[in-house]
Length: 349
Ligand code: NAI
Image (cartoon, rainbow, N blue to C red; front, side, top):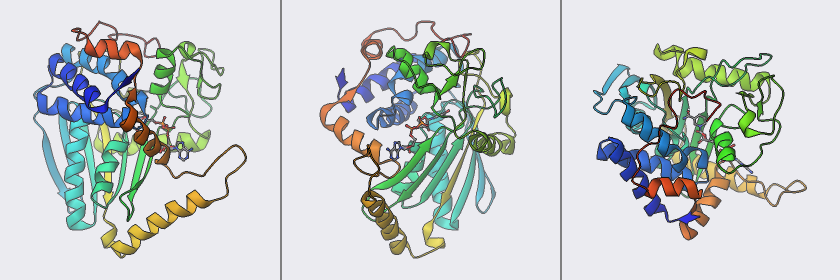
């Protein structure tokens, strides 16, 4: 069914607030979630609210966090979210990083002790809104086989990158380092659809098209994606003194425990490297040039990263966002949580 963006935002905010999250934090979380849904990233939008509400209600997110922000050098800082809600903490930390990059040209801000923060495009978009380059990486639940391995070790460890242009349009690369994000498997389950055979493996390590049989995900491009997910884990885990590799907490293991996740934001101010106007114009030029590349058979046009999401956003803003009926029914119901998630095998739900 279709739901207007503002209605969806309000439904999500109200549910999270009802679960116990302070109103200002619920406001930010729903903004990050609706950003995902309106850009067609349904794996990180409304479908997560029931899980977040259950974790909030069970104490697995600190509802009164004592946030600390420590500048450790001219361009470095550590933001400790005290295990508050990840979306809110990651947004605040990016605001600090942008301010630092305005002054010093570059900022590297580690975000320590947060819960799941959702679609990373939201945070790099904050940097692009301020005419800066944004990079963000974060840890996630160990559910990916390392290249050549038969057991999960790393998470789907996403990487996001943004670049502003002279027109206000932006390049936004935002991707899991797995062939697909785990949320895409959940989305296929919620719609009872099969998945392509290169996304994941079953309990024997064999490729599967049944989303309910998935036991581990596969890295993108074999050893290269494996290397990238390792890089993400080092930057947002080991570098910040947090649990790493297969010691990273699982989303569904114990909803009463804090997740202690890490994220790293890097903001680069183009002004410190080149002429700003020329930089913005050249980003516009590169976007245009890519759009003008001769398309391959089966393609209408070459798009730049983020453009398919911009196109989806335009349509959803006009006609309402496509939401799975069950998810909408949950959002409009009086129920906060259904004891759906606690102590579940991560691959069971
Ligand atoms: P995806 O596969 O949907 O898109 C990846 C990138 O490819 C995007 O930048 C997209 O704009 C671009 N793209 C897609 N089709 C294109 C085309 N035809 N031409 C040009 N560019 C194109 O993304 P994925 O890997 O499924 O990730 C989804 C979301 O999951 C992301 O927002 C990511 O941050 C989030 N995520 C969050 C995690 C967390 O723990 N917080 C863990 C893993 C993923």
